[in-house]
Amino acid sequence: MNRTVAIAPVRKSLVVGADVATAFEVFTARIDSWWPKSHGIGTAPLVESIIEPFVGGRWRTRHQDGSECSPGHVLVWEPNRRVVFSWEVTAQWKPAQSSLSEIEVRFIEEGPERTRVEVEHRDFDRMGPADGAKMRNDVDNGWPGLLALYSQAVAGKHD
Image 1 (cartoon, one colour):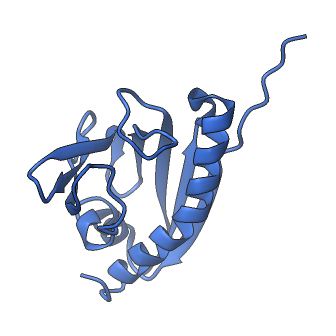
Image 2 (cartoon, rainbow, N blue to C red; image 1 turned 60 degrees about the horizontal axis):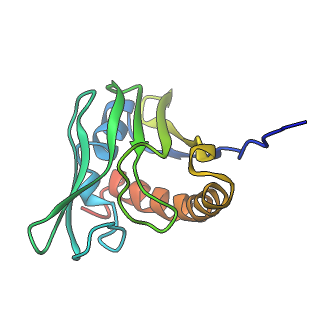
């Protein structure tokens, strides 16, 4: 019998003190205010992170040498509700030629100034068993720190 064991998605969530429109805007339009400059996949140091706000838009990074990389593309763009990105990064943290996994971010209103942000990073199976398991472990350990930085940016502590 030929059986494949699926690699479980990584799921993280947090509640931020902002309405859904602000939470969405900080995650997308203001990603450069919270995405760490140490988390670039280019060959030169990261200078700026940008998400182009439409389906097919790039999640792109600009680097000190003028080069650009695309960690992914926007697959779903539903302002103030959810955004889905392809994740075009190998388990060795290098740019890939195609989508290797996906990241879905949902924004759920919990009150006038409270939004639950849910992140699901999935489809690690596309990378193969060893690389998929490595990437899953890496992002499982990485998303909490990223979301803490995002939360600080929403609170206005990291602009």
